[in-house]
Length: 167
Image (cartoon, rainbow, N blue to C red; front, top):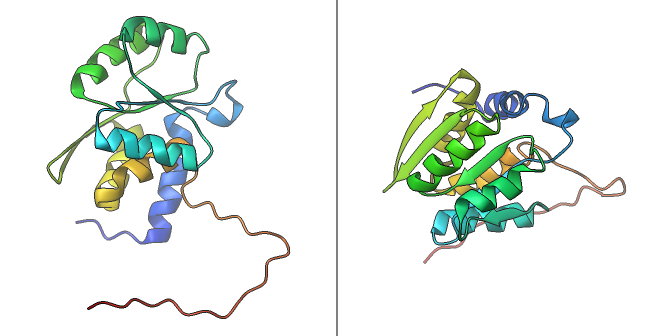
């Protein structure tokens, strides 16, 4: 196992996130976020995307026409939580539009198997480190929200305790 601090991971994930999309900051459009609404992980991904202020599109109906319409806006990247069949079909359609695969992570019964290129290694590491909360972590990666913390300019430090009760 690789010994990696939280700070080190967040730094590498932020760098990898920028590398994944080839300078998405300068891209004309946001990433395309796709999910399968029939999968619990897909619904969790979409819910967290919405919570973070983004929008995830459910794959529905004729995937070919849907993807052709979605790719017309030339999104900077595509992040998706789907079944293998949709990954194959959407991947082919996206490849025709000039996209290439960076990371593919299979989550199955608590096991994670990654097939990632060097520029997608952070996705595999993120999936491994985030455990059961991988859909939410993946949403944060897709929206560049990993490691971001905003503080209101007039906020004050308040004394507080964090604690847990169990029976």
